Length: 320
Image 1: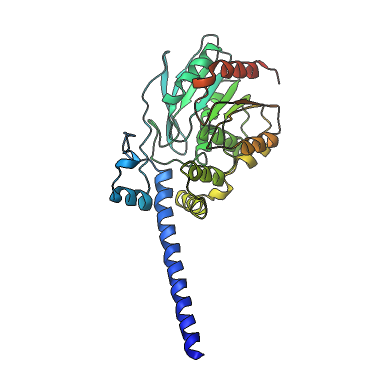
Image 2: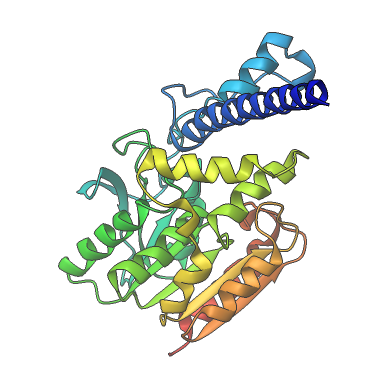
């Protein structure tokens, strides 16, 4: 009997040691992946090998250390005359200012994760046609702004405030904030944190919670979310100095009374409809929700330019 007890105890210790090793390895992997997810490298090329051409060493390196995240580089500039600005925020950020004749106001455009202000030029063009001046912004780490870090809208919220304050100081009285994905999240957090009061906001496909957006990336590649999604959120926040489980636009929405237009592509595999409905429900001011049936997590001008322009024009022309 004693011999069996000793054997059982020995097996239990081995199991516990094995589980401890697995737990440590998973956390080490999460640390590397979280860092790569929130920090850009100095690389500017986005070319990667096709999965079938990856060697065993390549696959192992990706699994354990993550994929390098090349710094988003501005590829095009506005077609109209523009001025380049450097604004001091928690990081120095670069912006392009485009003036419209007889301007009705200024639309500030904030890009998504992995993007930059070049990716907002086509939307800037549409706002210029509507009679609005624009301010296109590189968040920290992107384009020609300072740093190599991205916090998926958390610290970027202060940069939204910096742009808003700059325009206010210049005497602009009609400031509209436009964001896509991470950019819309940063807008929501800026309003919630700093009580800035733009005239209107236009939000494209914001995620509901940080945890949900990390889970979505696992689901896109067919990987199970538990427990690595939890570990990535935990370590990503810790490495960047904030509690990432509390970075939740669905909660920020509860403090927003600004008139809001929420836009969503119904084929979006990064943000689900429930997240959008929850955010929309929590917005406290005048609000509209417009969806595009065949659009995913992408630039809506590609498939729905006419509808997008109509929806935005109608929203901006409304008196609230």
